[in-house]
Amino acid sequence: MTMHMKNYGLMLVFLFFGGVVKAGPVDGAGKAATAGVVVDVSLNPSAGDFKAKTDEVSGTATVDGDTVSAEKIIVKLANIKTGMPMRDTHTKKYLETSKYPEAILLKATGKGGKGTGRIKIRGIEKDIAGTYKIDGDMMLAEFPLKLSEFGISGIKYMGVGVEDDIKLHVNIPVKKGRMPAAKN
Image (tube, rainbow, N blue to C red; front, side, top):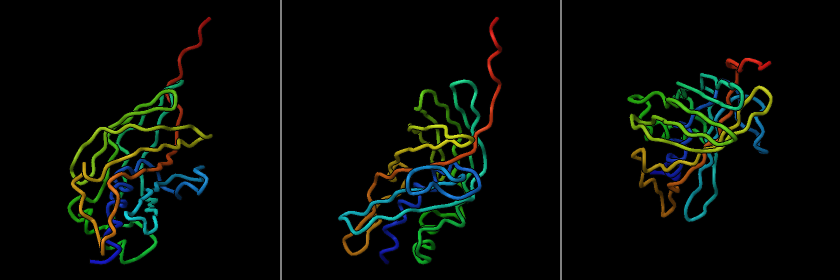
């Protein structure tokens, strides 16, 4: 086992919350330049953190008045990037991408900057909650996740392991939905 294995949990979270559409990830300031998913992964004891990224995401969110919704946002897991080829390979192994090639945001709704939804990772469905904001034609969302809730635990190498809690940053394009009729 290598140090790369401890980073698998974060990659899994990142992949699981792949509610972003084709494009690049969130920039360092949290602003969406294009669609994408970034997962912040922390190591314990602190041995440096890393980010997992992908641009193989499909789907959009719909804005209808002050409500946002999304369904069937699909993240393909085969080309996850962590910045290290060996860690990428181990991440795919732990995510079991041959058996579970996708992570799916099944359904989500939000209002006033807060949202809830349901995701499916490694065949396990869980409810999620987070925050979002609309920036032009993009929605920027953040969701905390626990790797253990998706059967991911014990990722450790030489006493350094992946923290159970991760944070997903998702950028997804938005489209306008049915707007309420004007009142006379």
